[in-house]
Image (cartoon, rainbow, N blue to C red; front, top):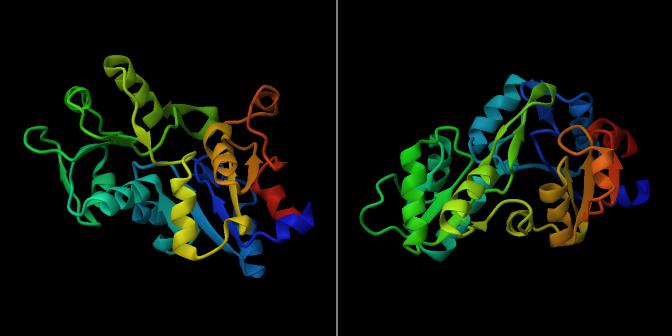
Length: 264
């Protein structure tokens, strides 16, 4: 087991529930980073949470005593922006999302609006902690009008401290599916687009990439879909009891990244 783990050149590390919970680092998080650095491996933080930009996450990590460059933090909003840009430069996007997600989209030259009138090229739904009923209603209308509909991530809830949660993008998708009967193209995990983006950005073969996370239906399903190594940690959403009936089978299971670091 250790030999195979040592062959991994790049670890994609989920954040919420894997590296920290709320405003608290998970025990062993710092030592895990030190171990990766000592072994000259690459680590990229990969999160489905599109409510914050890479720079927002950089500042959050600094507040927790962890210093990483923003280019080592990839969120689903960044990959969504790249996906749209590759298909239409300067596309006009109706956004159901936070100002931070708006920044991600505008950073690649997309035109972001919350006015549904006029030509709209794409509707983007994110983890919107600034959600209003008007945004939901506008999105409902645009979906029924046939506007291409993207969502940053399918997570139903976002984990917090003390096993608490808050509604995430997947819950909003469910609401709009109920009202329109239609589902979006989901860009974030478990879509392989996230891993493809990383492989293209780093030049590392997928056989040498591992996904580390706490969720079976996003993190481990990403590994399954992309045919990379899947490492489950039990510090967030998933319990050992969940594994009994889950279709996803991780390659490795650890209580947390502390034990993963020790295995390396």
